[in-house]
Length: 174
Image (cartoon, rainbow, N blue to C red; front, side, top):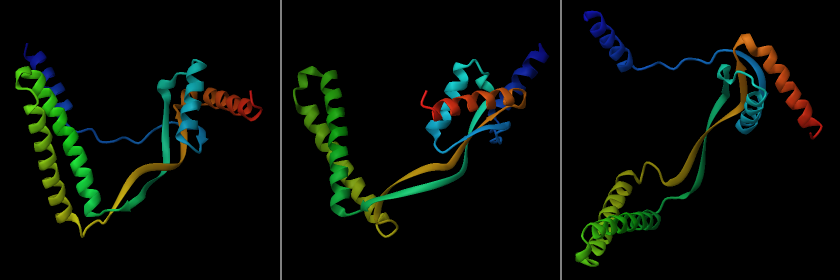
């Protein structure tokens, strides 16, 4: 009985510890310019009954790409805050009106006004505090220069042969 308790405690302690990321292992069996091409290669391996649990797709030379979409202005901030606040408030108002059908349009109007007001307030405060730190809107994306497909050594040669066959068929349009 003590042993079972000790095992449970040990298992619980192991689960509570944060797992450190491990580097991928295996031998390269293919290299591709896009993630989609690497996925297609793994799909081909899976279709050929290759043990895909031995396969890893690795993005090599990662880059963080930030595309600037435009300037941030008071008009854009307030317009965006008003739109999202109104939609959220309308949603909450509709939910409240469904819970209390006898209230009429009152919950919808209250939700709309409250959502609009609070979001405008918090949007304006957030922009005023951060205005001098960042005056533009952007989207960030993590990409890699290439994507390598790795396989555990026990199946690497078979994987290379299958991917070479895929490349040959793709080159001839089959």
